[in-house]
Length: 195
Image (tube, rainbow, N blue to C red):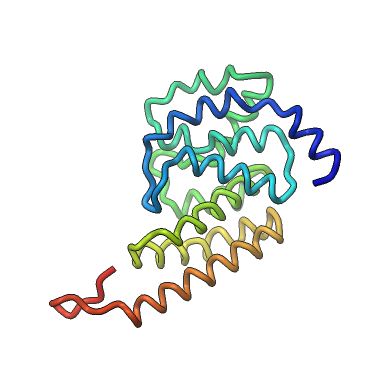
């Protein structure tokens, strides 16, 4: 890591956002673990790709708060520090609106998303795709993988081509896993492949 990024990270004040994100510790994920860890993973992916934008990283740490905790008091997020309004706007931008389908949500980010939203959604999906390695529900893995290829590849292409490449490798890995499981999973008593 170069000196500029090292200096930024040494001075980066993130603790209040991490504290807010701890509200997600009890929120489980299909892949195991909890939503708090996913927030941290998403931020780590952005840092790994050398993004040191403080608003982007703060939003990564809390990006699922509003969507996954319906009773979350938004004022807590709006009053953390001087960047809170921008962080809040970015979190709202990458959150599904009530009644919005997943396809409409991802299309909205692709067509209207800010640069930060495109990057955050791409890092979020990389984290989710990595977690798919721990999911045993083959139909879910297949559906999520194909959704990634159809809707998130174009987002990643606009955001960061290196991130797109990693996402492509993850999709290929999950497709290979699904194919393997369909051919090697013994049928249940009714003759159906179990997942």
